[in-house]
Length: 247
Image (cartoon, rainbow, N blue to C red):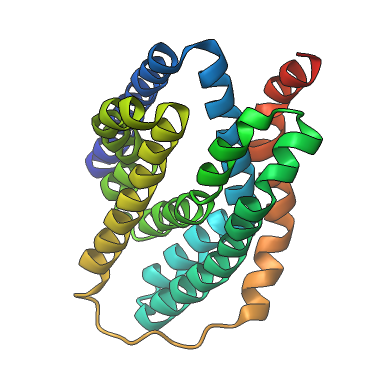
């Protein structure tokens, strides 16, 4: 019981810290960019968020559940196999979306939003779709291993900390695009950190990755994909899109 209580308190504390750091990061962006610039930043970020949710294919809870089940049974080969398959699927999907976003950014910015100034921010932010999708799946996978601290460092704390360190020099260098470079670099660094956490926690576990069933994974993640798309991508950003459409 004490272990459960300690884990709960740790998770709560890290989430509070992460929320505080994210708030500070957002305030800094607003102060540095002004109203117009911060609008461009968050509009581009919304595309990254939606793209990463689509690119994750509903695998968030699927990886968490399957990894936790196999770990409880001591099936290490299955743990490593399902992680490898999930990451491969998400890398292909989110990587494709990142390239499409980069290529189609002029059309999206001008034809859909009638915002020529959105082209460059959207182009650079699209590249964050891949690392942002992967780091979220890494966090869920680490939760399946019961590595809650590592998971929350990746999912809640990493990006704002690195972003705060980078935002001042890069925004001074490139304006809105510079702030997006800071965010992009932060997601890449945190993704690499997530990989290191996974390796640290699984290298000691004996067993090579097995060839996991793609059909099993797809059956599980299909219904979760629709739910994730609505709850994490469309609904949170709906007021923002509406306000920009009316502007």
